[in-house]
Image 1 (cartoon, rainbow, N blue to C red):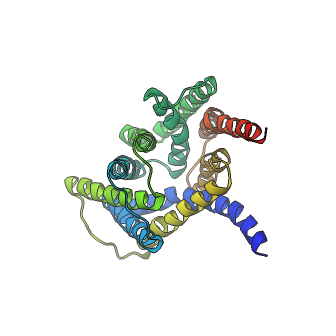
Image 2: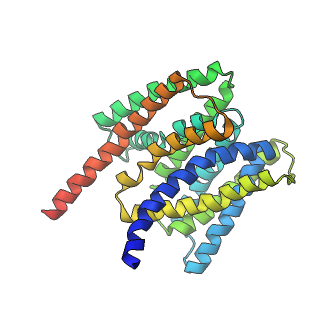
Length: 302
């Protein structure tokens, strides 16, 4: 019975990661309706850091020290702070489905940035996938411009992808530490940066009385943390390539949820652009990683 439960837990966690992550974009849009964007993001990651620090205390893990601490702080500034500041700003205008499609290119952009910084080689498959994703993203952006979405919001979305991708590349330059400890420090640093940005933007630090506002914030804090834990569980049992198929599945679920719950329109042009982006991500990163995993398995077995 225990083995059966354990065997089902991993695929259920994979599905749960996709469903929760897909709902995250809709929850952020609801948060932007109730909170000023940077203030809402700061509240979210301050509460998230509390959950991670609690986990660190329960697991009796050590916090990052030395260069590892610098890595966690840098990760928090770039990924949690700057990346989410741009994402929350963009989602004030950009559709949730569009944001999820563009954010799905994070593995592809991460590979490109790693190549430019001398960390990883760039293959022909990576170039092909990047080209497909670039064309698809251009089509998606054109559909957004036709909806009178501000260019600044679309550029902020691109900036969010770049910051989140670069944060992963930057983190590799520092010694690794416990994942929970790194995330605890990074989310706390990110929330502090978001609070500073909120102050500089002259946002009003108020707490709304509407239950929907607290529901969206609670979803982002609690279920967002659960999604991360489920992702880590799947990653320990499956290959990285298989786990990262969620990057392709999340936008599909987000678009369906956004259409059903928020009434977001999806034109044929948008679907075409989204399909090109997702195919590009698969060709450029996931299929290559899958091939590498199979090759490594054959080598190990021989």
